[in-house]
Image (cartoon, rainbow, N blue to C red; front, side, top):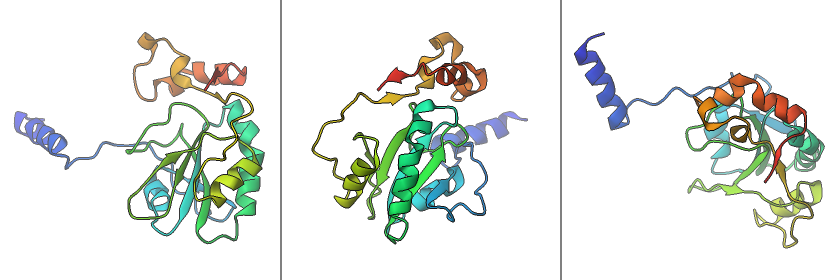
Length: 190
């Protein structure tokens, strides 16, 4: 390592020519065979921002009790829209995949990416049931008029550790604290 190589590296970072390393699982060979499509960091951009598809994505953590509770409704939604060529229902394990566009700090996080060139993204904050999800998709991404019946629960790993304990983007995942808290059902209200 020389001064010149470090300077060249810094110049590439500051000019935007060098992208950060982002964690990603490998794309499963059968990622698109089930009704709920499996996204990872490596295929997220291509699928979520497909100009011809409306893509509804659940960002989850495998240990999150709220994600597990919502799973049957998400599977039913994917089954219902399985034959709609312009709608994709997908999920991404946000503990094993990082994205450049945004971070996920609470689980589950539901984002809708409508078809089109402008790369829009909308956060879904309606009820977490098949009927509400369906109304949302059928209306082209408009939230149902009724208010949620109960406060949302999300698992928020960043709230598990004190600020001094979180040392990296993945520090909470590596510590095991968040997993234990979520398994006990000690997640914070949204």
